[in-house]
Image 1 (cartoon, rainbow, N blue to C red):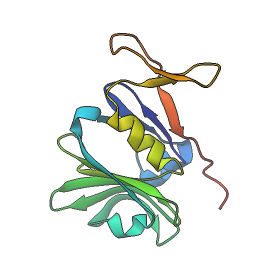
Image 2: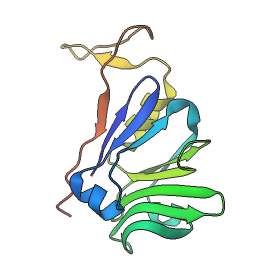
Image 3: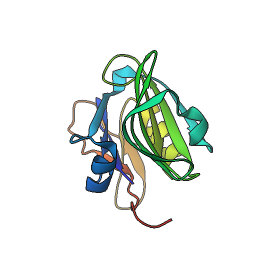
Image 4: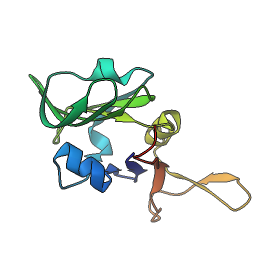
Length: 148
C-alpha cells in the first residue's frame, strides 16, 4: 500500500506505481495539516465510501482506489480488503475526504494530533523537536501492494 508521511505542515500519500495506474492518477496526494478537520479509525472502510467512482478502480470488498464524486466535492479512496483504515475529513483543497487503509492508523492519528513531531533517539527514548528545526518526515504505512 501507499506510504503515508506526516510533515510539520502536510500529510503526503505516496502512491505506488500500481496504485497510480489503478487510480488513474499521476501525482501523489498531498493534504495540508491545517485542512484536516477530523480523523476517524474504522474497521470497515467500505461503509465510508460515498458517491460515484469518477476515476479509478474498484472490485467490491477487495480493492477501491481513486476519486469518488459526491455532492460535496470529491473523496480520494485507497481501501484494500477489510483492513483497518483512517478517514480524514478535510476542508478546502482537492478532496473533501480521504479514506486510506493502513495497519498503523492509531499511530498516524497520534502524529497528526501533536503540534511538534516526535523523533526517537537510538535508545528508543522520544523527545519533542522544536518547530523551528527541520525534522525529516516519518513513514507511517509502508505495506506491500501485492499479497493478501
